Image: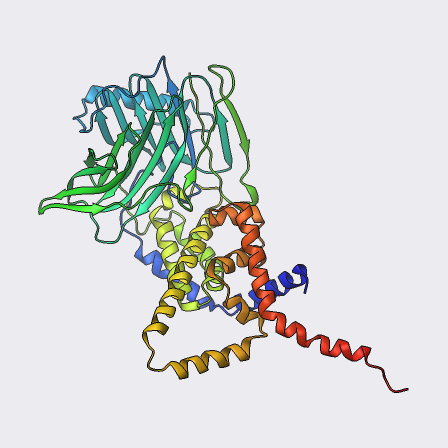
Length: 299
Length: 188
């Protein structure tokens, strides 16, 4: 039997078997899921530069702007500090401007911070605007924004001494009842080899503090705000567990392994072009399947 | 952080679920090879989509995203089901003869049957076969759904077809009996 004959027979047999699926079952499932949808949902999508959940076809745009030589995030602290209103407002403005400048981006819209994480001179913000969401890291030497949108596939490469937004991103959903319910881990690398990673997610409303135990043995205190958790760090280590504090005490939750497993989004941008240039290519998603894009701008 | 009501809103999820659940269920059923398990798979898939609907709805192809989740959940469920079944069989030795006899009978009844051969494929092989020959995806598209390389899809598909061909070989060896008759000299 030739491959063509066999595959043809297989196709026929599969279609025959698929036709036996009870249509009423599909209706029942759809109704059950629609009824079971949560009353409220997270407002912002946690998108790092390699953003989006593992396997998610969300289109993510990333822009990174660097000015001058880039110290490896000097002044970063493992414990976040309280955001000064002026610093937060300034960061939001810088992020909004950067987002507005993204080719194929959201344009000029009003962004509202939903969570702010401050470490030394750096501000990481989760932003929302209508149905859009974005994440933005600003500091003395870097402005990095990312947002999710739909439609097509974009890729771009910038140049020069910038942050290399190639990296990976994956989302983990934890068991019902866990204090930490969902985390998106995004890993980025600067061109000069200095990695930085972001962790964004949701926690039970009763959680007041989250401390991340890292692979390098250190701990990073995350920012917790209204059921959201937000943190980033520059040393390339990964979180392995979360020490979660609620009114009733502190517990430890294993976070599993983050990384580019099956379905994770893997970005591998390469920088090319003249300094200050921005090269954007656009292509449609192939064959009805989602693709991803990174959009990067280095100055 | 602003939140919005999740129920009663018309954000398109209900229509999405209504229009895609049937397709997801058919694909999952073929991968899992068990309709009841497939229902659980599709339900979990749609719940995952619902949790991320604000992002998924803005994708170019939300249905492709859902298919990707459903496929991978189905493979995991089928692998788990196979393992549990094997462990269960190993744990109940008190009726080995009956179980073995039943399985043997099933095998004899089905050994020439393509349907049964498909059911005996490893879950990931069956997933590749389903995506390639039922969903009519290209090798590249199949690779994207499964999160693997095109080369892996090719080799997995090739092995799956080899398994099917091997299962059907006995049937093929019977077929030549009629053709060999044509070589028999007819009395003149």
